[in-house]
Length: 146
Picture 1 (spheres, rainbow, N blue to C red):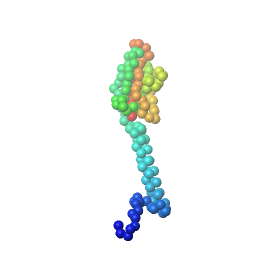
Picture 2 (picture 1 turned 180 degrees about the vertical axis):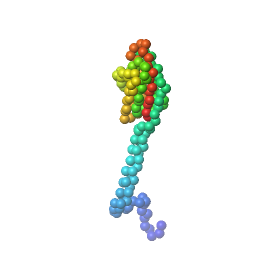
Picture 3 (picture 1 turned 45 degrees about the vertical axis):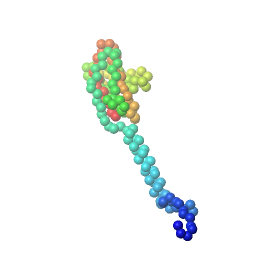
Picture 4 (picture 1 turned 45 degrees about the horizontal axis):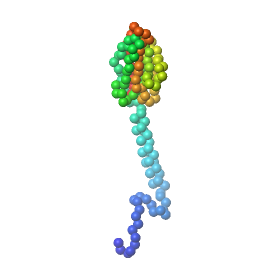
């Protein structure tokens, strides 16, 4: 380098320490950062949100007090909601949603009745079904939404 001066290093786009940055430039940078964060939040919300996929399960025959357990087809993707439809001509059936967390609180579903449970998050991992007494039989349809 000629003239014996020294090299000054600075980042591209950054003003020297004694100069002020244009507020318009700062605003653009801030808005870009906010937009990136909003997109990240949107991605997280989309992952947690319902996909609108309805997953009917083949009818389940429930006999006596023997417990039938129904799972979502993809056990790694719990349901947001589930409907349990007790067909006509069936005995009453008892349903338990999310067996480990439900503390043995069975819900009675009468013949020709639909019992629906809606959660705000994908947390329904299983449904337990049983009749009230030995000799009772029920045919139940289970429909989950993820």
